[in-house]
Image (cartoon, rainbow, N blue to C red; front, side):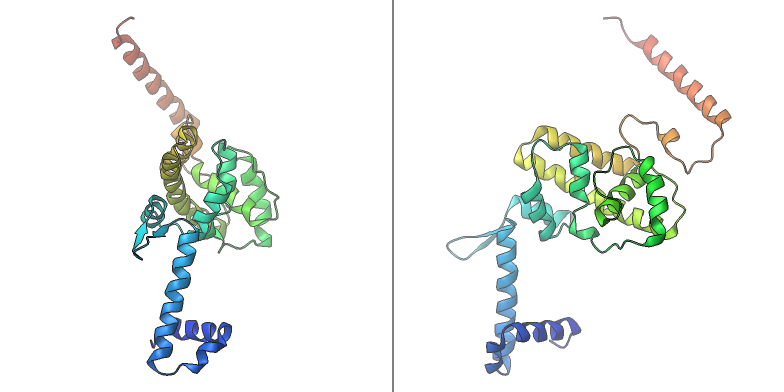
Amino acid sequence: EKFFFWIRLKRSILKNFPDLLRYTGPNLTTNLKNLFIGQSLNELISCGLVVCSHEEIIYCTPLGMVSSEFMISHDTMLVFLLKIKPSFSIDDLLFLFSMCMEVKSLQIKNNESIELEKLENLSFFPVKTKSDTLKYKINVLFQAYIGNLKIQNLSLAADSVFVGKIGSRFFRAFFEISIYKRWASLAHIALQIYFAVKNRCWPGKSLINSSMKLTLTSKFLKIINEINSKINQKKDIGKKPE
């Protein structure tokens, strides 16, 4: 009860609920705890993360298990349930990720607009939001993280890593939600993006040529491509004709 968080919480609740001032001593602390727990449960129930039975027993739903396992906030899960559609494409999923509450702490800076435009031109998928919004920055940095693009601005580079780490948990959780909803096509797209974040390469793109951080000359790239072609030829020879 002496922690700074509890003191701030007590002041905030007393400001919004002045009727609690008539309680003194341990009764005030008990009522504040009950009020705080009750409001938290109401929010979790409204988001579909927990359910309460007639015997007043609280059970965790499958969505609540996904949220807990991948550390997704209940606000983000609520956005999922309100915006999600089975006909979503990759562009729509990337836009939905830009609405994630976990990345709302990022800020837009004036000295980042030029480099963000350059990164947008190198993006694998088009960005559907305006260039002066936080959603635009999140979408561009996330695609830059997957494409392993070189970022000159140090703050943008740090934000890109931050967005990429959150995106890995986001799309893994989105895959589980799609499985729970029985949306096969959406689950496939979410899993593709998850592996793209994990491998830092979009599906169907070469791992070497997509990475701008590797300082390989064209000579070495040519040698590697020749070796890969020879390996593929040997594999084709070993196959039995149909």
